[in-house]
Image (cartoon, rainbow, N blue to C red; front, side, top):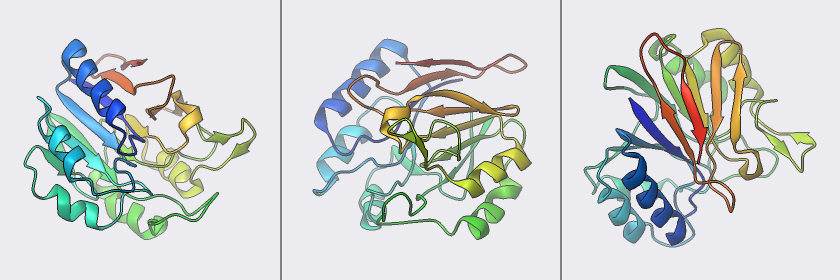
Length: 212
């Protein structure tokens, strides 16, 4: 299965155009959006454009996606929340946790990390793709190249359950590929220099990951 993963679109039309262009060029099976999809205005126009993309779209909310965002999304059949649920795509299990930690700045939403991570733990196995908004502490989470602001509880959770892949965003300047034990971590934040990540998952083979 081929995943095209993006985060931190922030409702910017040029990023939607880039996503459409890369889908056309790379032909993924699914588009995964790891939060911060919407901007400050009503997301309906942007959601219509995302809904029209020629692949299924799975998402979790980030700190810029207000609660009403989910109400808007329900109008669009091609866009599905994976928050605290498990889906199979081409026999690959995918689970999501929406929200973000409330540091280094106050966010509009935050997840009660301990209880929510405990809730999704039974959904995760060694082949699972886990989609979150913030990165785990110490991996692709440095602000100004110095301050690590990722989630400590998420880091411990990954060390414990070891999903195959974690897709995240939130820290725009840290798009990249990392690892925690056997788990590969991909920060797919969109920015001036990056347009997400392309991930090929083939049974019994190493993940093939490339930033775009």
